[in-house]
Amino acid sequence: MLKILTYNIHKGFTPGNRRFILHKIKSALQAVDADIIFLQEIQGKHSSRSNEINNWPDTTQFEFLADEIWPHHAYGKNAIYAEGHHGNAILSKFPFSQYENINVSYMKSASRSLLHGIIQLPGVLAPLHVICVHLGLFSFERQRQLVKLVKRIEKFIPHNEPLIIAGDFNDWLGRAEKHLCHELGLNEAFKSEGGNHARTFPAWMPLLPMDRIYSRGLKVSNCQRLHDNHWTGLSDHLPLTAEFDLK
Image (cartoon, rainbow, N blue to C red; front, side):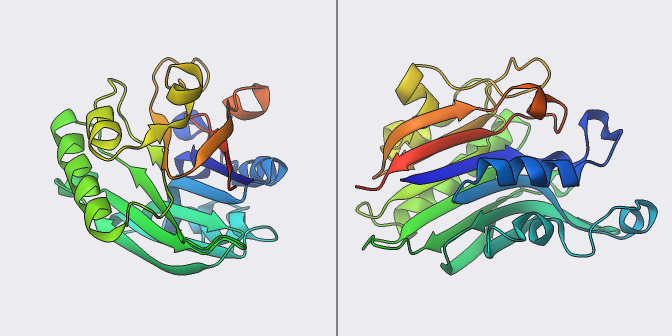
């Protein structure tokens, strides 16, 4: 069994940036104990916040969250600015054989990338491909980014090797289905199990299905939206989990 989680952590702040709660997010993630975690909006560096906030970690946010449970991690910058940068990260209990961050930005004011890693699972012959995504806010932007994602998969991922794509798609209208399901033969965990995408935004009253877990070559055995009071105040998104039967 392989358990994965995807979560937009909003740089470790509560909605509205009122409080820094990265330590609470760490405890919550550790309690779930997923094998692989896909994170979006994770702060790689921020010079002023690291000096102003008392409990800002001494390491990067992804290293801080990965500590004790996930010894292997990959990070890809999305947005780079004078005070630092933020982006996507993948935390894993299993080693990466390689990873690459692919720039899919179309506007300097809204930098985006795809973080593609390859993980060798114990007892599994074929490598597992994992792609963490955070797509743009505008429809025309997302469509171009999805085309780049499809081309990346068709060029670099053999059809007989398992694939998981997870993250914040900003795709409340479901237009990613054409590219990922119809063209590539992927299944979205919540839609295949329950008929609908999970609503994850805003966390306190989730109306929009922004976050997704797509897969190919793996069988989903369970999926959950984590939406109790423990999670609703940690970020503006809710996390999703899925379990896959490796047999």
